[in-house]
Length: 300
Image (cartoon, rainbow, N blue to C red; front, side):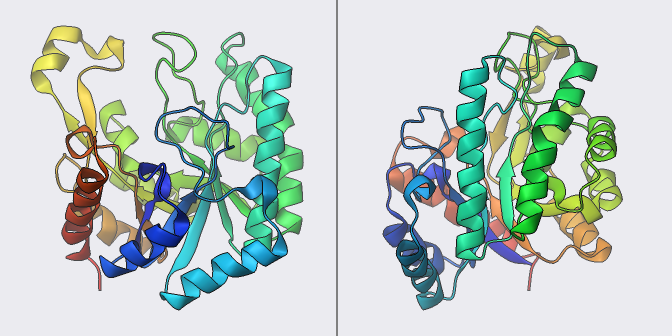
């Protein structure tokens, strides 16, 4: 298993600077953020402009990674792919198709995204809509040798206050989605940090769904007991926060052992959303270094 990180934490840093820094600090892979250039979402980046990726630029990128003994573990673009505004939705799906094309051009096997949610529909109808939207995308990706890993963040309050915004946040929903979309190239970008605050057994889920885990996010969660007691679980937010691995409540030794025993032997990618280690490039780098130091003790 190799350590990497999602480049979204370096929103304005060029890939040509990120790769040598990552290699110099013990990382072996990068999960490259590939949002559209006009995107304004938090925790997103245009580390690589896939909308204008040419074969020549793809060769340059691959040579850059090869020069430092690094690899691209995944191209990541997470947005609401079930937006109720059909023009907005189609724009996002068009970009997702460009991400898949870029992955094929680069020889990258994993693309990560969200399912999303249409808040005007109930949960069952959202799942059926996901089937309609994603079936042709998965068929096209399979022809190009690309797998789609859904990130399991609930995105609470994303579209409507008090409502989760991504209908792929629990094992019960994964079962529904895998039944509706029985494609071999449809799986998970598995993130235990969300499962912890949701009350899901993230170790058992890793064991049960390992065949569907294409990529793993390393992000921790700290539950703020005082805020939980004051706000209550129904608020969904405000009583937990994401942290660097080792600074929250995830049992990384047990989780990594479970993944290895179950057969996962790919990349563990730090997704930096720790508010303590944000605010400057140097603080972001410091957080990544701490995460790398902590996780590396469990890996060869």
